[in-house]
Amino acid sequence: MSKEPVIETERLILRPLTLDDAEACFSWNSDERVTKYMSYSTITDISQTIDWIKSTFTDESEWTWAFVLKE
Image (tube, rainbow, N blue to C red):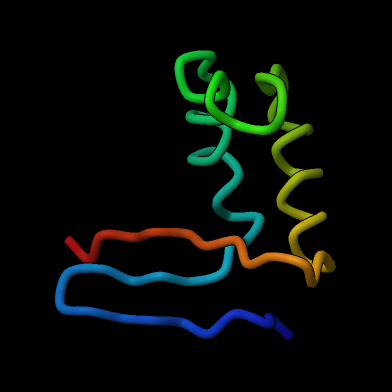
């Protein structure tokens, strides 16, 4: 069971990450322009993204959100 609530506005849904988000997450965490501002290195393989998402399921020290436009 997820520790994060789902928050919904008129145009946006904030929800916990799922493994279904791996491809979308890989698109930005494999981009050096993005990861130069992050606390981790550029991801080079989608399996690393999947491992990262799985790690968020048990990490109770922070919340990890997916931002989804309703359109």
